[in-house]
Length: 597
Image (spheres, rainbow, N blue to C red):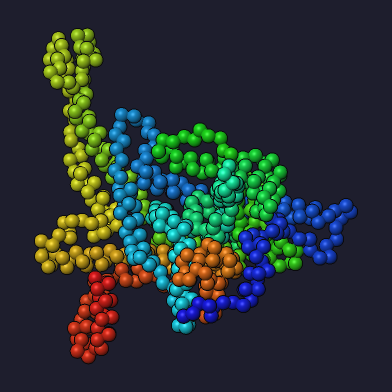
């Protein structure tokens, strides 16, 4: 296809008119609260007075709503702390320092087994997704979209963030992606050659090259930005199950005071009310919410916070005073000052929050992870093992009863030591206390508990148990192993499917919608994404636009579950129909079978 045919004539005009300013940064005020038409202002009042009054109302109403959500979420925070302690093998201080404190890392093992399995389920091939056009004639555009999104996912270090996302999902049952648009600035040092012409002592023209160094703050990237949000930093509404159903979503973020001031003073400020916000001081909310986690590893915070807490609210509010509530973005600093209040800046008008539940609880926001159902079993196996060790310790370090009137006994020497001697006046004056081994079945009990934990979380067939998979068991053993693996895959298939459809696929859709909104300039696309196209010098926004639309098809999970059954069905079909098949069809079927195998 000749790519020059995809040139957008209207876009070429926009490129010429906007060639002096292609950074696509908005220069609107960060606080866009408008006075309604016909509003009767009191004597001496002004539009600024109306805006400040509206800001106070916003803070009062939204922070009141935040308090309600915080109180409701406390029970979940305690549960999440218990899960974190179990994962980190942390010990809570006990009143009896002599008792055993051994911690069996079963929860850690479960999470570390399940994470790579889920990664392989949803990211097991070179291309994690395909872009399928609704109109077959736009196949070239779909390929361009796939190139663009793949490059943006790589630049966002998706694989690393995906692992963090999955671990949080497996631990707490709920995990979040945040999708925003980023214009990335960095300091760059440029060296430019300068030629100097001069005449030497012999009268011959000479040329000297010098280099002039300059340092500039330049735009180095324009792309969607993907962030994994901590489960502690999202405040949903009670009794709402999905992002689209909740009227407000509260996202908590933290920003250094100096960085906040720099952003406020920039030529195109993202935040406003700088002085009012800085006057509120700093916030210890980050340390307070994470301190429970820190104690699980023995860490105590010794630094003074320099951050401002920014509560970002996405929902509906009447900012323009027309009597209708529209989608908007509001940011409140330290729960006191509005620093940003604008209509939803994205054309898709959605809340850019992607939520996935591992095990979905009907009609509830938070899901269930792998740890919550077996948390009591983790505590039980710790208790059984500790009781066994304490019992052995008491048997080794025997206790004695001593006649109170026998002053010849040295109490300090009544310890179990090799070749030890205790002097007594009469043999019956010192006697050992009888203790029995009452935990003889402790190891068997612990084995049963562990089996219960793995049955409820990660089946043994997914842990790579070599005894179950050895081929020397014969065909029957191998067949049983394959069935077990297939059943285990099906058990994880529902969760993996939710990760694909609710998570990765939604992220791709938001990425593409942001690209359509912001990549409208040929010069920008050529500068930052020209290298991914076959002909970088011929790049236009029309190359990633489609009139009929596209669909995103995940390419891993659909081929992972019941793979053996698919291979068998295709093999049987090929055997029966081989004589009637066209040679080209034979090649296609054999390639498909080989890929599955």
